[in-house]
Length: 283
Image 1 (tube, rainbow, N blue to C red):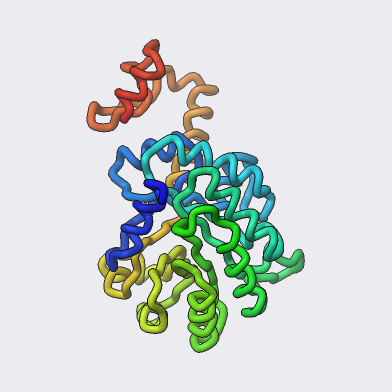
Image 2 (cartoon, rainbow, N blue to C red):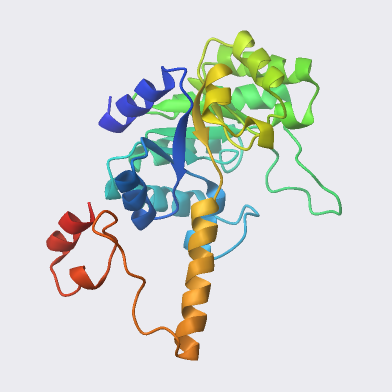
């Protein structure tokens, strides 16, 4: 078992909703680790923005996702959970997705039951594949891993778009198929999460949740082990970069923002030093 997989399994074994840092590139991984996060998650949306400068409309390829995973995973000691989309195709593609993401150094990967790319029509929302296909993808995904301890999560938005009984049935079927954990996106209420917890014996990871659930204590109460929050850091960084470019173009900025010794990001104090000196100062 790799150190990263061991770390993520330790986190998932707890009923404490650990916040996962949203990662997009190596520098974000280093900053998140320095900030004190215990784990990171790289969503396809953030990877698409970082690699392609494009929105989250299923443009990134498996090869691009795997290469960005490799860069992010080697940049810090954080265990990284990677968004494997829908497996980038059918069940055989899902098998290869797991193999490539594991080889890139990730700690875990999600395979979701959403139909991707989304239908190109007005009002097209989230749609899921059949339960049968969802189960088949999880079974195939598990065959793709080299290390039997590498973590494969079944991701679903069923709680957001399906009746509760159907959503719980899907979750139970994914557990029966061998998923190590489930990644639930779009939970609307504490009762939904508690029902999911009661229906499962494997760990629960959540992504997007209703505003009233955005609290580690509440999610911990519901038995959630890991909370993957959205792309706020990347959006804030993009906003700051936009302002910096505008200021530089206008001639109103001549020097970088000053950091403190407790927040040693790249600044004047590290200029001219070797990479090793910079890394030591940064981390």
